[in-house]
Length: 343
Image 1 (cartoon, rainbow, N blue to C red):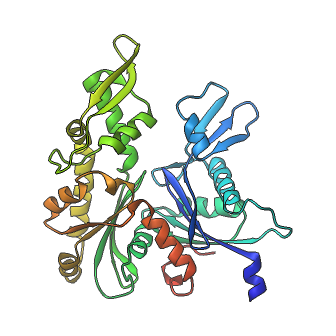
Image 2: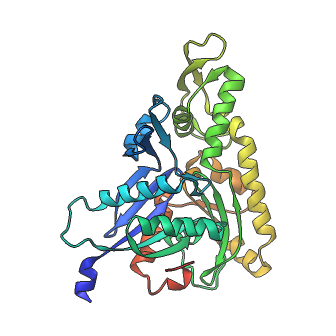
C-alpha cells in the first residue's frame, strides 16, 4: 500500500471559468487564471495562467488568448487539456523516473450535461489522470465551508463563480433541489463594460472591467464603508483618444443591478421548490455564500433583505470550493457516494 501511494499523485482541482485552483498534499499549489495563449502560426500553446492573462487584450494577430471554459463548462477541449497539463506540471516541477499515477477529484457545475461531464473526464485523462472523480460545486463548497453534508439538516449554499451561479439545498449527503444560472462574475464584467460604453462613452477591456469590479464593485448603493472612486483609463468613443475618468461604487451598483436581480430570482425559485421541512431548517441556518462573486460589497445584505433570511459569507470564499474538493479527495472512501460519473 505504501508503494502504491508512493507512485500515486493525488490532486484536487477546482476547474473554474475564471480561475483554476489545485490542491496537492493539503496545500494550494496552483491558483492561476483559467486562460492560455496560443501561437496561431505553429498552433503551439506558449503561455498559461498568469503569463497568458498578462497578454489578454494586448496580443497581435499571431498570438491568440483563449479561455477554455465558458459558463462553467469546457468550450475548447484542446486548450483545456493543455491548460490542465500545464497546471499539473506546476504541482511538481521535478521529473521523476517513474511518472506518477494521477488521481484527480474535479468539481463541476450541478447543471452540467452528460456530454459536458464527459469532456471534463476526457481532458483530465488526456492530461495524465488514471482515476477521475467528479463532485458538484455546491457540494464541494458546503464541505469547504464546514457544513456536515451527511446530517439530516437542510442547508442552502450559493456558489457565485466566474461563469455560473449555483444555488443548492443540501441534506443527507445529496442535493435536494438546485438552480443553475449562467449569470455570475463574467456577466458582471460585461455589465461594467457596457455601462462604461453607454454612460461615459469610454471603451474598456475585460481586464480593466474586472479591475473596476474588484476595486469599486457593489451590489447596493448603501454601503457602510464605501470604497473611494476609482480612476479608469480607456478609449474615448467620440475622439478615439485615450481618456481617464473616475467611477464611484454607486454607478457600478446600478450597472450590476439587473444581473444581481436574476440571481435573487433564482434563489427565490430554489426556495420555492424546497420541501417544507428543509425550509424550516434553512430559516434557522440561513444561506451560505461562496465563490468570487460573493465578495461583491453588500451582496450578502441585499440577498438577506430579499429573502428575509440570515446570509453568511464563507471564510475565504474564493477558495471554499477548492478546499471542499481537497477534503473530498483526502476522504475519498467517506465521500465516494457524493462523486458523480466516477471512473
